[in-house]
Length: 89
Image 1 (cartoon, rainbow, N blue to C red):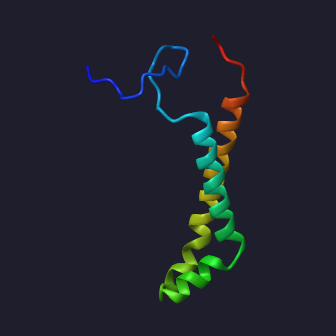
Image 2 (cartoon, helix red, strand yellow; image 1 turned 90 degrees about the vertical axis):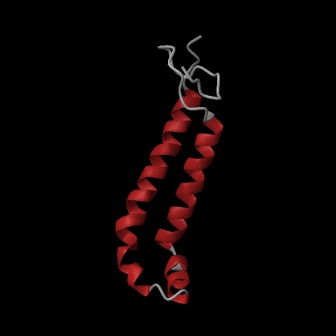
Image 3 (cartoon, rainbow, N blue to C red; image 1 turned 180 degrees about the horizontal axis):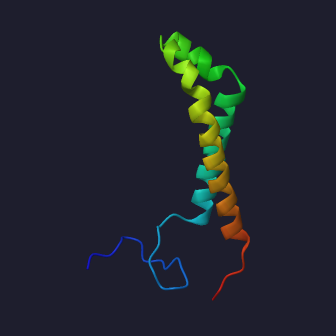
């Protein structure tokens, strides 16, 4: 059986989980949240898309950006929850 390059055991059942640390997961969640919020609440993305000639995409921004903001908030919340829970060793 081929093993993952990461040798850390991530769950109590002994299964090997993803090699992403809690800190990396938190950085991804917060970074994605900041980018999605910046594009949702400021006209930055509208200006960039207009400059690139992609004005037809602007109508779809709310359909994509609002759920993306929610997903990244959930990732950040999950990372915080994992960091705050006591170690089960």
